[in-house]
Length: 218
Ligand SMILES: [Zn+2]
Ligand SMILES: [Zn+2]
Ligand SMILES: [Zn+2]
Image (cartoon, rainbow, N blue to C red):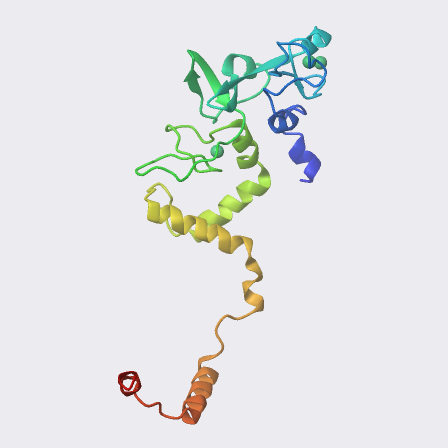
């Protein structure tokens, strides 16, 4: 299970597509009014394309990126022909069903949410596992699933109750899992030595006069 194996799970254009910035001015067609780049060629994988660029990709599989509140989306009708998007939540935007390319930052998960993205914890409708194609790539990678199994093992109970307390303890667990260096430095010295040291130090400290008297003299 080397890194190559991991990469072959996805079509070669997917990760470059998710990294691309769209809706920028086309570098090659600066003078054109229609030069906003909202297309991507799955065969050439050469970045965001404007409608003029697209003339050079006539027989290629090009896909159109759309925007929803400043986030990139793709119509399900286009993407599902070339990619398995199962588990990724779809949204109806402008009467078309779409998926988000990448996770969107959010302040914190809402209260009473029962189902969240396995990667970024955005709240989702039941039956979906990921908020976006990007989270699906991360969440279905073998290394990530191994981590989840480890997390589940350290969690005493199943994680279906998703109160905010539970969520917090879950993320703490994941932190602990990532730094396993703990064992190198015992955080607390053996109790006997502690007692000895504090007892010895106490002897040396002279008794302090009460503060009250000093303050009154001013
Ligand atoms: Zn092309
Ligand atoms: Zn162009
Ligand atoms: Zn997500």
